[in-house]
Image (tube, rainbow, N blue to C red; front, side, top):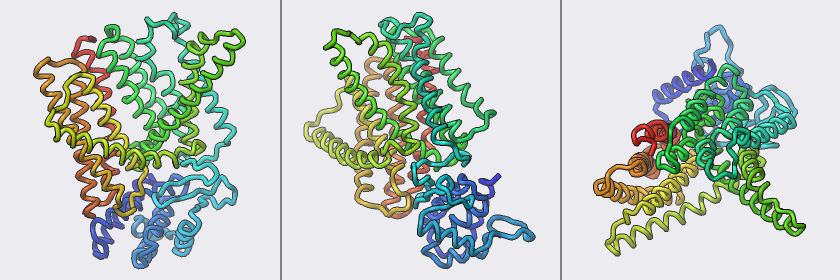
Length: 502
């Protein structure tokens, strides 16, 4: 009920400001996006719809006295409140906005304890100062110890889940059943990550039922289809099942509110941080395992069987849960590292692609249409899209265009040229050798990437020319996320049928 009230208030606010003609359309778009993000964050803190709207509006209007006075004087009208219902006191609203501006803290319950105080940044992100955790759950204070124990139980559950098939004869170190584990790898950890966020966000148990069918259907497809051993469709299903199911994790991460664009962008940011932290944990675990094997071998104890059957598989699954919790609670410190890595690798990838295109023009040679090369180029384009997507999620949407935005345009433009060349080479390969699962998959993926990158380039150019707000880029990327999941589901469910499971 609260969100429609805020949306209606924002619509009235925009119409009123437009009637006054005090702001250009592009600046008004930016203010509207900031107002929506901040009001949503305050609403999730526990403030009423009217309080959330007034405080958020007061904040975005802090540099415009006329705008702030307008919101203060017409707040009740904008919220659609009946005339006999008093609106929140204007002075209280100004005081709350001032507290946000000066101290960056809001205490929705009027408490002085640490559990009731939150940080609000310029993007509307709300967090506890002690942990940095985004309180997108119901706002109920959960004990850190309780959450820690719950996460440990989930991690242990994921670690043990991968050993359950061994009870039915699927030994993890048996080469003949590796395809089984590859096809089912998503079902050992993803359900536990989903359960963690559903619990963390305070989702009603009735809505938990929405999270079960996708996992059940995916598990059924992966284990009922009669795949050929090491066939192309089996490999494609293995690769795309996690992509399709990750959207279910995102639904739980958003507390079931996938329609809110800010939450979708938060999930993009979380996914990038989780990947980086998980890789670091895996590297550290690999070093620890190697040292352990060496130390025990000095005593004549061979632990390779334990490493292959227990430590690696169980540790890999449990680490996903722990990494998700660390990122969520802000204890992984990846929120500072990830943007730095993005800013390092974006210019490097841009330089590499531009150099590649320069050599291509200089030599006059086309792209090698060998299968391995085309797969490598597809992987490159996916990495580029990942860099762009995470850069968008980490950027302050209200900051003016800068040099890094120009680098993004150069990276996207170079990637588009490479994508076109790959599509041309792929078309020639299909014409010469016919259609196969891998070629059809690569063609579809390149088309999806081309559409995403092309429209992103258009929106980025509009932003650099100050004709559209950066929020348009964010909106496009978050709205496009289901396309990747839908394509992954299509490859997983339909490709085996089309190509006879080969």
